[in-house]
Image (cartoon, rainbow, N blue to C red):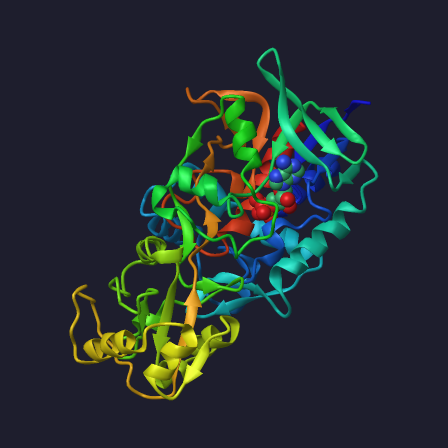
Length: 434
Ligand code: ADP
């Protein structure tokens, strides 16, 4: 009961759906397999919006954000490590990507004059709207079939060319043969062991900020057919997160106000103002790979402080000793830790000291989580997968978070759904010979 199609897309997040729609638009027969019961992936939890440059929106608002600005910002955020040729393609196609989203019925505004690179929905949750619009569009094509609960397990190679994949679906295991395969399986956010394999600093990282699907399957399948990987050691990590949310580091490092982090011994262990990824790595070295954020009412009264307490299910107490009791920490040690910090004692050379003096006091448990996988499969400008010699693996494409090379060591928020669309389209167009 093997089946045959023109284009097989593996993964039904933003990149896979865009690819499938684009291939179908071009008249190809398309099957998209999604291992979960529903499409959406981590695209559906994408909260901010999309980055775009030189769009109609920028023109109308008189707020310039040019393609050159976009490239520069992306390269700088990636510490110069991203592949500039790919970044250029990303930025140059962002205006068309924006137009496409508008054509699907979404409506956007520019985030703010200060941040003109962010295009956000005029209302509602971005990721949910995006996935809904893609599903509606996909539903228009009779030549596009979405098979949920269907997991690709292995790519099929014949004469050095990828010609399909083995899948496990309702009714068992079978092969889907295709002229080309697009890998769009997302990142590693729900594969903590794989994250630790690629970067041992992140051993024990949490998988709270993810949907279940992104478990690195695409990376494994691609490596098995000789694909080259890029930048695999880089993950966007949110050191201060719990209960599926993340809290801005500002709660521990706002000048003159910031709180502190303590471990289960109620002791500080780090300069809380260090870069988020370093901070996360330090928290992961502590007992149970977690820490408590301790702060006072001055910090609580900031938007981020309140958010941390509410979403992190934090505790509140009139005294530091009572706070310690509620958190299960040694009260005398926590008091001594806070007093030392308030007195300006700091063995960690913290850049700017704050104070924890104004009661009531708050404590929030925090667990570092992976938020984005920067590295992934190497591709060329056609989204074709490259092998370790830099040559194309015929018949194999990749798009979305499974791709490496677009981010280097850092990601501009919102570039990710842009790259889903830009490279999802490029992959499909090239695969159908357009
Ligand atoms: P992107 O933004 O790159 O599209 P997402 O995380 O939004 O990434 O989507 C990736 C999708 O791929 C998820 O819905 C996930 O469940 C799906 N997926 C991952 N591995 C497989 C697999 N082996 N077979 C089918 N679908 C998969």
